[in-house]
Length: 214
Image 1 (cartoon, one colour):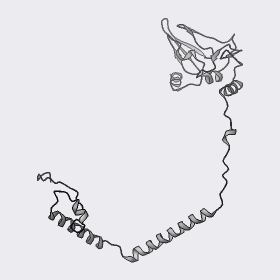
Image 2: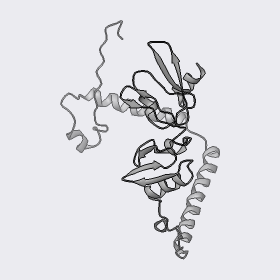
Image 3: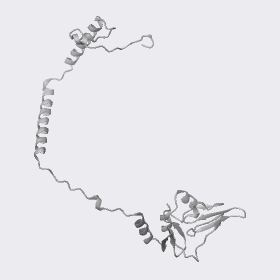
Image 4: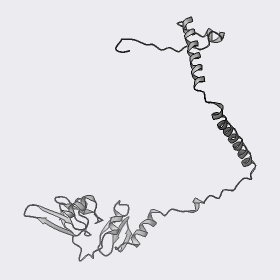
């Protein structure tokens, strides 16, 4: 059609306007008698095509019978279900299950920690290594899981304006002007700023594992 520059316009028209006066009254202005005749011929051809492809009764009758019986069985099951006594549903009472509070979770972690901790002024302080952390800190679990070194054996390095946390096992690499501080446990490093070495030592993460393999 594009090569032959043919333009085809499609319009909807009501059917059976030649037999139904109500539909004929609603016919659009552009509709002509030959439109009605063409639409009628189309319906006749569609009906003839349907008869040619109609399935024989010996194929459709068994399926129709099964569908009819299935509907009857479903209706009977519905009526039987309606006559059954109302069942009691025993749902678990979730209101009796109390979730542990944040304080209870914190106390449980402290009880299983290597640190001997006290809670004072919203801080958790170890009485052995003297390290402390705010009780609401995001990394408090890492602090409680870190090794506890007595104060006389704990070593902290001054980097910039801050100290490294004493739970780290620090090794120093470098020369006269450049020093690299690395924890051999978690793999975190520092140069001019303390960064992650200011926080308690924890299990090595992805970047820490890369540093430890280097």
